[in-house]
Image (tube, rainbow over the protein chains, first blue to last red):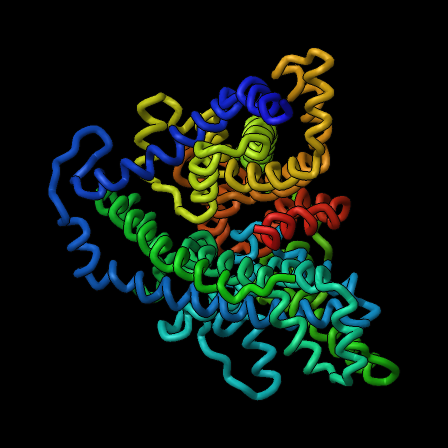
Length: 293
Length: 276
């Protein structure tokens, strides 16, 4: 009787008609373009007419050095930003759940940049990274160090942008870690205290294994975010000097600007496949090491 | 870590000094330079302005026939419209997906979650928008923002729905509520806590969005606040004072939100992440 009631009501009251508004918008402006991108990536295309050219766009993408440099750069950028966000976020998360009296202040300060406009942050940091005038190199000169040309030197420009990305995004990682640490029951720590563990034991045996869900979220969010990055690089270097800071997403934009719509779409498909290939296995691998509370 | 006495004080002092160097210096740098004249600002240093020039702000606001003000109106409209649509459609979706548990809801759930990871296909989206005559229109950019925001909002609504007891639905059904009335009069008001989280988070995200307006809402007339700032970098490439004044103006709305909704923003951002 109860079961029949539920099935009957769920058909009538939880009707799939309720999904229609969201479904239509999501399908037309997200799923449909994604599906179509597979076709259009194999065409020469001016938005009106298209010629089917098979895998030529992909071949171009993989053979042109100005395009395939994006793969290496994007991977480096994603790994560096993700790694630093995990490391610093965890450190800050542990510090900000300890007995510090100023943790409220620190939390706010670390988190606030997350809400700022990426373009604004990019502009402010480009001015601070100016090779001769910039605040960073002037401070270094004060200590007798000749600072590098942060954004003009092809060997470090990408890392400089990645550093700003971490500055802006570490607050997000920190609050996720804080939430993860706060959800660990206090009794576990009390038990360890009775057994006579020190601070490192606390971290190694309790905090570290039990924040696995938070850790997974941070890694996945930061890594996918890194792979998809565009606006910060665009605001700071526009992919330059040369192509040294070009990411896949900025190459997609450049090809779009140049009117190479098919090639741009091929870049999109490569990014889509790359994100899926890297992110889904990562998700599986990471969720294996989660410990149930 | 239970710190006490001297050790804690040393730790706190170090933390404060680091936070000042890493976070306050950049903020102060932008603020003082936004108040200098052009030559002083070109020095790009932290010194206090010799004479405070509030006129920089006025100059930015009236530049190019009040471009900043017009783009601010555009950004505000886009943000408000997107959020209004996003809330209604995502709440309906999250509600039905959580309450039903059959084969279809699993498939739909997967498609929704895919939206959190997959980068949107840019040029095909332009093509679709163009074929339905919404490219370069306010409606178009609003619908794109909604489409790309649905996944996260549905995730939040669905997990909150689980905390609302089914007995409430059953009581409403027994009292003769229709399905529409039940959702809009019973469920939607109960979802208020998530709705406010979605409002705060999406407004920051959409207001700060640069990429989507760049692709789907181009043209000088349409500029949003982030596009205006970006265009100013080439227009004012020697006038750091004006550029910084613009940055401050643009950062005010998120700052105000942050002051009032700090807790809710943090709670919302972590809610989806930790459970997910």
